[in-house]
Image (tube, rainbow, N blue to C red; front, side):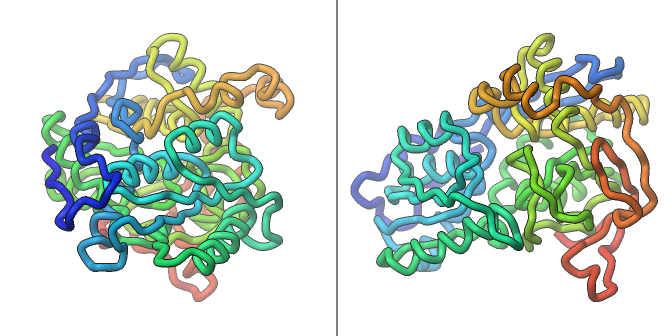
Length: 371
């Protein structure tokens, strides 16, 4: 992947020498039993790109805003994050020369707070969730306060900014160059950025590509009720405009016990692992490889395990949250419609519902929607 330097003059403090560290991530063949034997799937290791997966989106959003004159040289960037986009924006801020203010919440891991600050970001933390919309709504409210008191500040609005998905076109090009064929793509869904950015180019290359969305239990994205969520990095209590519901053939909700079990299995026998999103997509990708023998299945591991050493890989944390005392599901419970039952653990549904339009009686189209 070749990235052109920013079109505007680089402000003081910019470090364009970081650009070659973005992207070009390898594929790993994963055959770990998750939890059953399976033929194997391909995993794109975004932890090996500086800034992780979301650095692609961060660079895309900031460079596009600079071209349009919405982001002035040296101006402050303000965004809400549960952690991963924060790392990406810290990378983009250093590359382009912009101070970064990140609005998080009190559930942000201490190690992630330290890492974000070490990379030069300033943190604003909210200490209680909003009555409606949870932590995300509380973070957005604080973000608006920060914007109001910060001159020339720019909010990328990762949940609704079309330049977020555009940042993943480079990943799609890499996948097309790395694989001769792809039958199934498994994508975690949070802001909706990487699924929306990947599916268009990949379906133009492989028109029959099946796309499986992976969400968290307690997430409202695909029509389930919003609940407090232990897992971070996927799922949402709000309705991001970047989620293209029509591109998904089916959706799986995964619980934290399944994600932890999968992450630990990966770490023990595949060496490559990650956090909640990685565990969730790996579980579903292994299931897809078993369900469709001979199919080429691929997914994306968004980051590595390091920020999760105090959660996913911590026995005391997992025991305190009941994640080691309850046997994780070994296959999904299937429901006919997202509103048929609440997903409390690994659940599959082949009816994909856009919860943002469901109240108006509008359902998302099946496979092939606009991207």
